[in-house]
Amino acid sequence: MYRYVSAAALAVVTLSAVPALAADLPAYEPAPAVAAPVPSFTWTGPYLGVQAGYIWGDSNVGRIKPEGFTIGGYLGYNYQMDGSPVVVGIETDFNWSDADDKAGRVKFDQRWNGATRARVGYAFDRFLVYGAGGVAYADTRVRVGGAKDSKTNFGWTVGAGAEYAVTDNVSTRAEYRYTDYGSDKYNFGKASQDEHRVMVGVAYKFGW
Image (cartoon, rainbow, N blue to C red; front, side):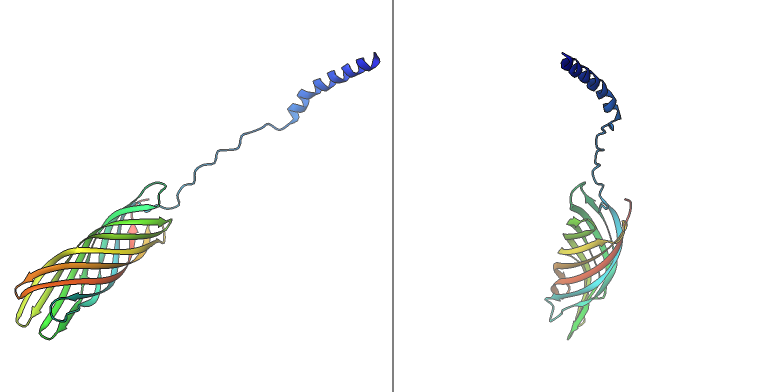
């Protein structure tokens, strides 16, 4: 009988001590929610840049192969969807050119050129690779003997390049383009031209 009374008393003491022990335990707090990472950079925004490069091409007039330097500016707008590496945009440029050639009685000069292109790229954070294509235009002057004429030529252009954002607003790039200006009628007959070029540029992106 004594054993039963002692066991009952021990049980009562133990149960009464449980709330006190529970009060001494640290309160459980749920782990804080982890916020989604915020992209460190986006290509979205308008931009304005300067560029320079080298042109080499071909013409069906005599043995003319015009080549020379070109320098100018470009402006455009990129859009990068949230959470996507795909970048789309549109760009136009205008450049002065000294590409020319002379063979016998034939002389060819390209005085200026430009293009309006759509761009599609894939971004690796601050590094962007892209392709571009669109409409190209150039002013050329051709002289054959005593006959000379000038035209504004229109054609198509395609190319590819790579761009790197040095800061949130400044980027540099290098690209290659192929352009076919088609055939135009001059006062001495028809003339066609196509060209290759490599360009480097630096741009400022507005906004954030």
